[in-house]
Length: 291
Image 1: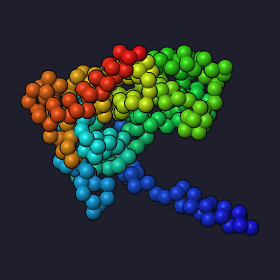
Image 2 (image 1 turned 30 degrees about the vertical axis):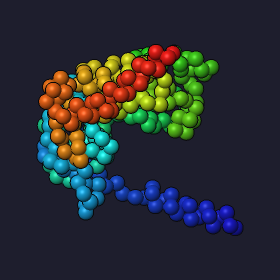
Image 3 (image 1 turned 135 degrees about the horizontal axis):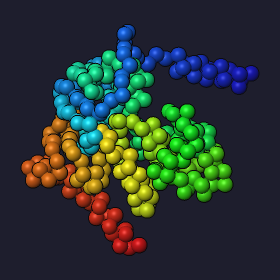
Image 4 (image 1 turned 180 degrees about the vertical axis):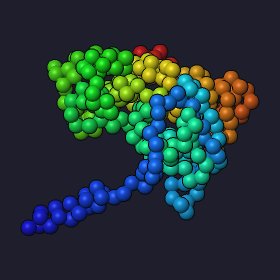
């Protein structure tokens, strides 16, 4: 009887979550976003997580051309994650507008928007099922040949085939049976199979060894080629090679440009570059030297 009472209360809480309405929904008359080229514009965007809270983004304006890599750099709490949450409409901007190929993201359907955005974050979300199911998530009609090709491009095929069941290997809840580096490469294969024009990446690989990091970087380079990419930058190579670097501080862009120009003309960029990125690179090189 006690267990039934506890189960009843737990079930009530679960159904509260299942019945909760999403704050971000399709507006009446929303149109389908056609296949995009990848031009993204933030027009005077401000954002608050709560209507009465302090803004976490303030009057943000910039433009990304198709195929460009935009590196987002700044301290914790500077607004990097908020930017990448607004693109696929996990939240809506409080003020201003975000446009993709001239379409306001609030005027298009969520399905047509999110199906054209690939996301690879440090905390990779995998589901119970097989490795094949997880790679094909978002493109359930993909053939085995397409899945294998995506895995090979993501430098994941070899470790998948090392398992006795290969692509039919079961993946535990949240990918518990795989290492961090393996999960990230599965996520990259998933994004490659989706073939999106827009990418959102967190390039932090602090939890993996240097060999795995090199493999992940190789896979990410293939994934980013020819696509408009927004990258939360935590490595030197990402920053140096970016077409545009946005340096954020307290929700505002305090510097923008390419690496060489910013290093020469922006003290705040030089400080972040030297404190956050160069130290990590020196540490990595020392580990290689010891090895």
